[in-house]
Image 1: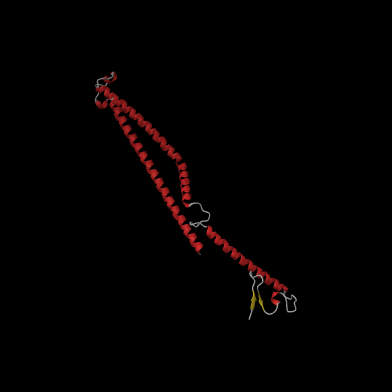
Image 2: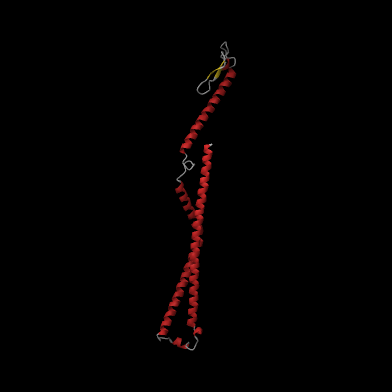
Length: 215
């Protein structure tokens, strides 16, 4: 029956056969198989080194699992703060990209407001003119137009044109305001969709990572 002498690291393991030939010496005490003993001793050291590497790898893996946070990523920043910061950065980039269009729209609105104010000023002057006529204070230029019919008189034509201009400007301003509100709502909706999709992808990565670690 074979007997074995085992060391703690496996570097000096050999089988006891009643002689020392396996470990490099024969019965007479001479090293007749020294080369073979050296080879076997080298293999023992290799096995011991492999065992040491396995132990060290297992220890490192255990330490890695302890330091992994609940999201499944090592040294990852706070998830909510990270998402918020990413969303803010995305919004900032989108605003920079839209700045020319926004500036153009604001310029157009300013011009429309100026035209609207001008139309209101004309309308105010027309109202004052009507009040003067109702009180009998009519200018000499108005007397020259007394023979004309009402639709033909320049002041009424100007009033109608100004009223149409004011209505058109108000309608255009209202449409542009509605368009801006719609664009803002659409942008916020797209941003929310993007955040939700990002969260779903992150959760999927975490689940895949957890399954990989459990194996």
